[in-house]
Image (cartoon, rainbow, N blue to C red; front, side):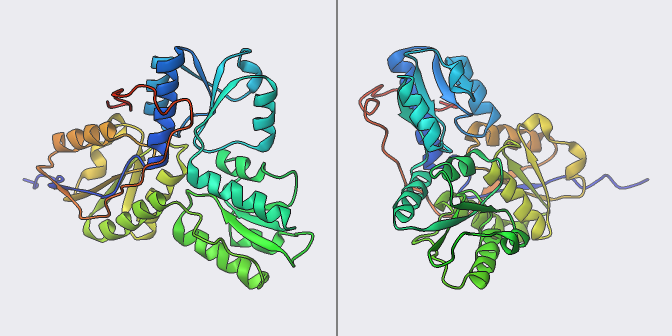
Length: 326
């Protein structure tokens, strides 16, 4: 008689995980705008890259669009947490929308740095993923002079008009290690390149990646809660695999497959910066149903960052409980 397959016994919960301050702020902006102005509120692009969050806000009256032509005159428009180009900003103002900008302040910091250095004559090398809305927003701060590199091989092909004034900026949700490797290649090719004053990769992305680095050697499998469109969630799953641990990313508990856990006694669980805690709780319940009997939270950094809301919404909804698991 064959022995019963080993089932998961313990879930090791990463700390920190889930929502960051920029995501909290972006969701709160949409919910406060809905409370103040009523439905519908139009949002350019997904406010954050999470299916559950987007569907929750749709149910409350948010309409997500990509083209400004889909927004009726006089409507209230929110820019997503990823930021938008100067052209989109100008078009939105010209159309007379009431605008609230939910761009993460850490992305705005990159935009401000680009504008400042461009006035000083700098060109830029941007490390990021082509087509990602944050990259499009940052590159769209200038009409020209920003060159995108996605990997070390791209660095050899980039061809700035001049190298006397050259600066590096990065997408905020990249793999810390991958970005460092690409930045080093840029520095090798362009020794006088200007590095960012502070690391462009956001504190929350770094903290979640650091937690996965600590967690991965202690577990047999890593589950990342996050949507396929979420850059920072994808990076967490990739990082665990690079550390030699089988890893899967799921949008919801329904996507978990029992076969993943056969022979895996300890499960590591984390969530991308746009994934709400309610999804983590549902995943825990599902893994418990497969046999896990305990949940242990890792020691980790306690994040206390909070970003201010835009004028016009700060006094709204005092006492309003926001968020998709509120």
